[in-house]
Length: 160
Image 1 (tube, helix red, strand yellow):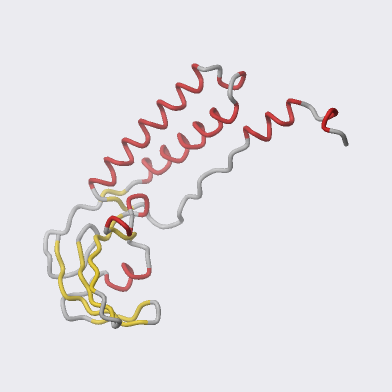
Image 2 (cartoon, rainbow, N blue to C red):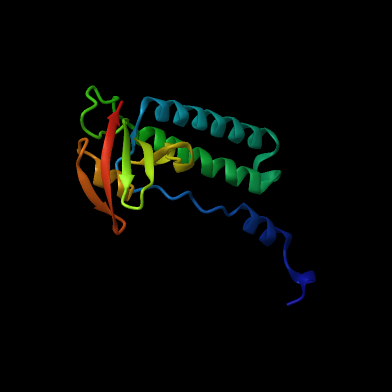
C-alpha cells in the first residue's frame, strides 16, 4: 500500500500508544527519602499531564498526552502502594534503609544502602531490597559470610 493511502489518524494513534511502565510484584517498601521522591515525581507527572491538557490534549500533541497520562498512572500507583519503612534503630544487623559494607572474594570492598526499588541507584551507592545482594545480606551481622552471584562476600560494617 502506498504511503499516500495511509490515514493521518492511524499515524497519530500509533504515536499516542505508549506502553505502561512495568510495576514490580514485590512490596513497594520505601525510605522516607524514597517517599519524598515519589511525591515529587507524582507532582511533576500531574503538572505534565495538566500542561498536556492545556496544550490541546487529544487534539494537540497526542504523544505528549500519552506520555503524561502513563507517567501519572505509574506514579499515582507507586505512591498509593508505598509502604514507609522507618530507618533501622539498631545498626548491628543489615536492614532496609541501612548501609552495609562488605568485602568480595576478589578483594573489592563495597558499601551500599538498601532502599526501595524506585530509589535504587547502584552508581550512587544504593541497591533495591529485592536485589540478589540485598536479599543475601538482609539480617546478617559483621563477620557473616554469604554466597551471591557465584562468589562469597563478608560483612565488615553495618550502619544506619
